[in-house]
Image 1: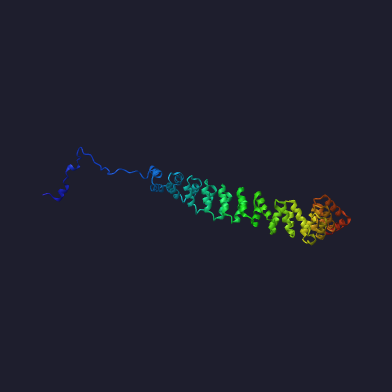
Image 2: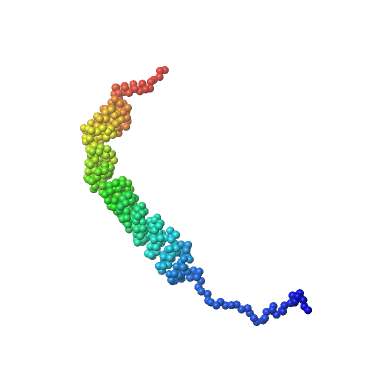
Amino acid sequence: MATISSRKLRPEPLQKHIKKPGRKPSFRKPSHKHGPDRFSLQHLAKAILEGSSEEASRAISRLKGNAEILSEIAKYAKYRHARLAAVVLLQDDLQSLIELAKYSPKRDTREKAVRLLTKHKGALVVVACGSHYADTRLRSVFKLKSKYHLLARIAINSDYKDARSASVGFLLKKPEQLVRIAIESEYPNTRKEALRAIGKSVSHLRKVADNSQFPDMRRGALKVLSNMVEELEDPEVLMEVAKSSPFAECRYLAVSNLSSDNSALLEIYEGSSFRDARNTAMMLLSDSTEKMKDTEMLSAVAKFSPYEEDRYLAIEKLEGKDKSLAMVASNSKFKDARLAAIGLLCSNPESLREVSTLSKYRDTRTVAHKRLGEDEVFEGELTRMLDEHPIKRR
């Protein structure tokens, strides 16, 4: 009787481990054919170029993050849906959107790019200043119509007249920005548009006349002010016209309107670049010499008034004011005024010495030297100096 242990030691039949000759291992064949590789570049290109809008969108979505390829698709893809899908994927890439808005040959691509740039005002300024396409430039300007400082930047910097003109058109009620354009723009036609838009606003025209770096703008602003001279009441504006207007008649009218303002007349005389305006101002200033008390104005009349009696009257009123008399004696363009002033300086050797040294007129220096050399003057001055610097006894 066999035991359990003997059964465990009994070897298994050998037939199970022997390979039968002529039999080969068989493999199960797939029951379906392989489809196209949806992750291959060829399939992506085919889907974008020829596929339906849904299939193309899925293919383009796989290119997210690859700005260069998306930009190419947005610019040159045959189908609109493919281009717009590419633009949408570039919405976080400002530089790519700006490039598309400026240079894409496809209008729908440019429009979509500008729409996505709406929240980025600085980018719209770049597009308005540099896009190759008028419709895109004007669309960008329109989206900035309430951003006046940015419109002024476009009007100053854009290379294209249509963008500059559109910007000025939105600024018709913003004279401060128009003044900025008239002062800074390098484009003459834009400066002229801005100046016309300013109209008859005296304060803003004056800013242009005072601050523009362009001569044509200064002349243009002064011309408008000159045409309004009879209506002007502001002394500052009248002075500007009198000093700088290119029209003699307007200068004369402006100076005449200031005939009762001695300070303004003196400023015109000292600051105008036109001889006729200076002469008119000095003549009107001389008319009030009798009532004049201001030392500076009296000195100006004594030095430059064309009327001899007014010069003498001014010098008489300056008696005792040796410093002012010395200035008259040194600088008056009339010999009679210089000599009259020296005559009142006889008792002041120090002022005579100043005249003899500083006067630009030889005859005046000679008279001052002679006065200093007179016995009475010389003796008094020498005595004073000896008193101030006593000689020590040895």
